[in-house]
Amino acid sequence: MSHAKKKPPPPGRQRKSPPTDWGEVADWYDQLVGEAGSEYHRHVVIPGALRLLALSAGERAVDIACGQGVLCRILQQRGVEVTGVDAARELIDTARKRGPAAIRYEVADARDLSFLPPGAFAAAACLLAIQNIHPIQPVFAGVAALLRPAGRFVSVMMHPCFRGPKETSWGWDEQKKVQYRRVDRYLLPRKAPIVTNPGTTAGQYTWTFHKPIEAYVKALRNAGLLIDAIEEWPSHKTSTSGPRAAAENVARKEIPMFLAVRAVKMGGANAATEPAGEDSGEHADDQNEQGHARAAGADAGENRTNPCDAGGA
Image (tube, rainbow, N blue to C red; front, side):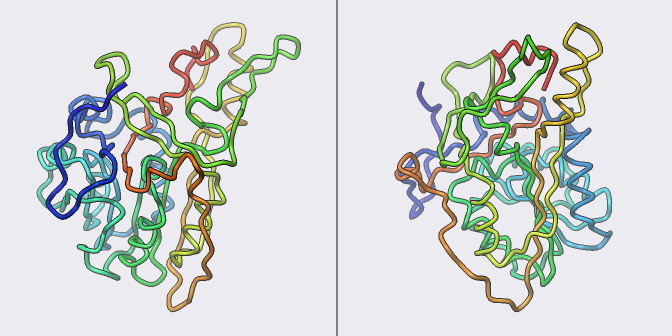
């Protein structure tokens, strides 16, 4: 496989490795997400994120890796003053075209948010993108700098335990008539390619960076962000026919698809620090790789050929 051609980085900001945002497939992604979000956005991710963000009209929020602006538009409709940041210029262009003009959009690396005013935001969000940014410590440190004291940061990701690309899958126990989730790897950090536009252009892919949950906890704490809520969200889908429908529905309810974490900025406190455990030998040469792989609607691309997923994730 080979990367599609990308625009060169600005002078003075040379990358050690190619960018991995979704700018090359912005049109396809915009069609997938649309004005109000993909199926998973509408039924699971956005309702949960809005509840955890707990924003009121007139407050300021920033959406990190905002894509084509689906969360930004919803927040703006609720009276929130919102800023969206994404590394893909094509997606930001699409977000601006969708409007409204009251939303501020910026093309920028999520690992450098220093261009935004410090201590100015009541909340920050990163939906279905943090697993496609590496390393994460600069992201969390940047978010902490932007938040006012007691400001909230909500990050939603594919569940690291049960939704690892290529390393987790559905299985069927014929004897027990039970659908189960197989997990082949979990603790060690790693990266894996995922197809950005499945079924169409060959050779276009981006990276997802797997980390265990403890790596996110440590990175948040090192940034001075204290976790006050963790939620695990299952798929909303339901099987209505077939001999395995009941077992599929039980498995969906028992095995979560998404992990949501809310962390609060600790005002005036000095956070203890220790290595966040982001890197292994597989990551040693990938310190500057960033991608915003939007997993909603595609289940991170992990099960497209798995017959056990015929009924949906």
